[in-house]
Image (tube, rainbow, N blue to C red; front, top):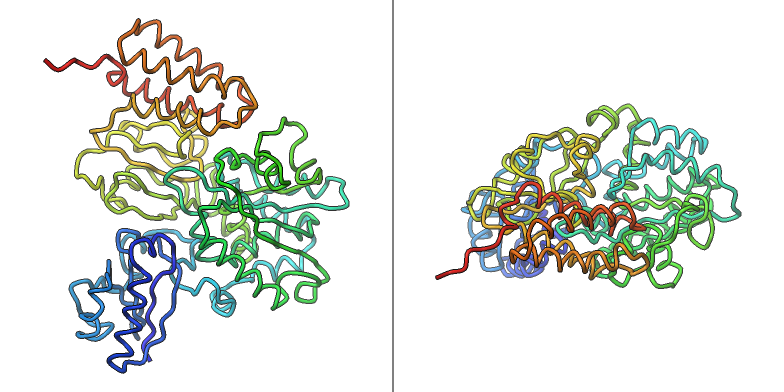
Length: 512
C-alpha cells in the first residue's frame, strides 16, 4: 500500500488541496492502486501548495504545486517516481533543511487530529515530565529557557506564570489568545489546524504550573478549520485522559474549551479579549490590575498567545538549556516568521533569533514576486514600522529592533517593492487604527481620524511644514496617551514612513 499525504491546511485547501485529494482517491480506485490517503498539516511552503507527498523507502517524495488535472499523470509514471512536478525528498528542500523547527517540528509530517500520530512524534513528553514536577520547578524551567511572549509584547512568560502562581484565588484560568489579527500572519492558525495537540499540551502544562484548572482558547471566527481541528483533538484528549480529572493518574485536573471571537482586531489586546470572553463588548480595560492578578471573571489568569504556549512542550521535554541554546542576547529560542506580501516564496520560516531580515527576504523568500527591488518591509503586523533596505542586516532581536523603534511582534513580514507609495501606506495605518479602535480612549479614537486628515493635507501640499509638524505632534500624543498598543503603536508605521521615505509625502506633480 502506498501512503500519500495531501495537506488539510486552509491555505492549501484554498489553492485546491481538497480537489486534489478527491482526484487521488478516485484515480487510485479507477486503477486498482491501494493507497492510504492522509490529510496532513502543511509544512508552510505555500508557493508549492497543493503539495502531494508520497512515502518511499528513501523518504517522502514531494510533488507541487499539484492540481486535480495533474493527478492522472502522477499515477501514469507511478507514485514516487520522476515527474515534471517532482521536488525530490521534501526534507532535503533547502527552504526546509536550513530551518530550526522546534515549535513546528511536526508541521507537514503528522495527521493533525491523530493522537496516536502525535504520541509517536514525541507528543506529550513535556506534559509527562511536568506531571512529575512541582509547579515552581515547571515555572523555573520556562523562566530559565528565556521564553518571551510571542504575541508582540515579548514579556517573559515565566514571570507572568510566577505571578499567577503566587496570586490568591479559588479559581485560576489559562487563556490562549488565538485572535491572530495582524495582516500577513498565520503561524497561530497553522498550529491550531496542523498541530492542535501541541497547543493543548502547552496549556495543560501551564495550568499545572500555576494551579489553574480551566482553560479557554479564544479563536478568531475566520479560523473555522482551526476550530474543527481543536475540538476534535480536545475530544480525543478527554477520551484518553490527557484532559479532565486525574490526568494520566497524576491527580491533576485541567478542562479546556474553544470560544470563537467575532472578528474585532482590538480583541487581540489581552484585556479586550477577556471582556469579550466574558460576553461583553471587546473594550480595553485600565491597568492595573493586571490580568495575572485580576483577569478572567476577576480571577488570576495567564494569557499567552498560541505560539508562546506551543513553545512550552519542547522546553519541558528537552530542557530549558536546550531551548535557550537557540537565539541571541535576551531573545532566546526560535521565532516562526511568516513571509507575505510581494514575495516570491511566501511561507513559514522558523529560525533562531539573530537571523537577518535580508537572509529571510532573499535566501528564503527569493525576493519579490514582481521581480522588482524590495523597497520596504513591514515587520510586526499593521502596527509595525516600515523598515528600509538600509536596515535589512539588523539581526532579528527584540532589543535590536526596539532601539530603532521597530518591533518584531508576532513575526509577520509584509514585503513591498519599489512601486509602493509610502504616504498611502502611512495613511492606511491611521485608517486601520480608526476603523479598529474600540473607542475607549481619545488619542486613539480621535487621533487616528485627525491623522488621516493631516496626511491628506501634507500630500496635497497644503502648508507642508506645518502639517508635518502637526503630524509628528499628533503621533507623540497617540504614543504617550493611548490606553493600549493599538493607538500607542499606530504612529510607528506613520513615523517610519515619514522618516525613511520623505519624498513620498511631497506634493505630486500634476500631469500636463
